[in-house]
Image (cartoon, rainbow, N blue to C red; front, side, top):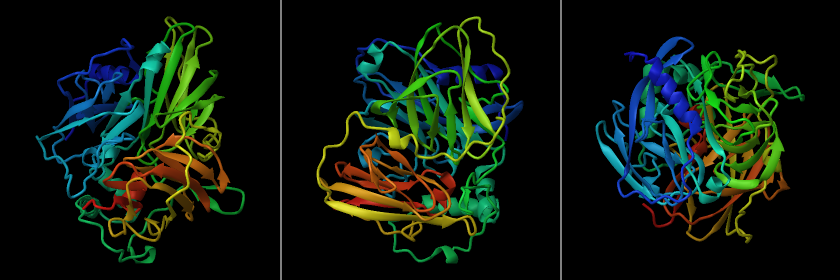
Length: 496
């Protein structure tokens, strides 16, 4: 079923994503919960309508913005026509409010409302469905939590949310990867989301019975090809629009900007290109870092970057995101009043190189975790391949996987080693970790919630404090890798 396309609605939603108005630094916490509606809508992509999911806040804009001191007091209303559950990506709520379909926290029924109330941490975050493949259908939106220091900077807030988009149904995309029918792919997704307590593994990669179509590869100089881009998408979106009709964000001459970039794509990684502008990365995944200057930055799936920009003059300034290994790109245009805005080609002159950890190696946390010896050190090996399309952690496939058991108060270090030919953005629910080593080299890296592990024996070591008891998912944030096995549970002793 196709919903009617409203160009006025499209323009309004795009503008709402891009430019967030500045409000006073001191606000009174609201007593009434904010209403967030998980629903559907119509989106026009290069002149063609499509039905997509929507997460609409109380002001009619995508997602939610909270002011300093404001609680995350939200009533989530499910008007999506089926079950859903929304994850508050990067936030640190009690585990029963995290938005993951454990048996104790089942999805929200159609027409039902679930209430949340917790103290959020400030920064650039986002929200997305953890129900089946709904995320691919654009069930995602920004979640911005301001702090008083940011407001004192007196910068214009601009949000840039990236998506990969297909006119094909998500079930069809998964079916193409595992070489089955869309109906069987849908049944597989339902089986994974309706999990019971994880059980010991019972299959290996050779036993999965799944096969896949070839994936684009890029040779890395050793005669071996790095796998890139599981899916050839129909379009790439920046604030729901392509470069045939990009969002124009009006800025002041010599304006001071905070650009909040969210990679909400399901299976695509990007290079951010500021063009003629110079920027400073000041936060990664919502957590402050010492400023890193530049004009081109990698951003993996589910990661966020806060970039400060001081406009040098009057004019129009494209901010582009190019897909790794491809010429495709999306973006917005920052434009002063009266500036001439030229047409921007949707294809770059050359394919982008694979997203890497060059920026990661330069990041340093403003508020690092307290130094201490680890109480628990655990090694997780990432593996998998395109044929059959199956991805594992320590040789096990979700949901038949053994949980990693933690005790409250432990300092935990996890060494992630990637034995596959594809990079994996690994995300931990309910905790912020610090990156403490890349490929065996110690660093005092960023505090964040999602880190990219490079292919062909790339390694990352992370550290965090076990201070949030519960059941927590740890998974690759490539949606199709997660759905075909690359997920496990971190569970605290005493939680059943």
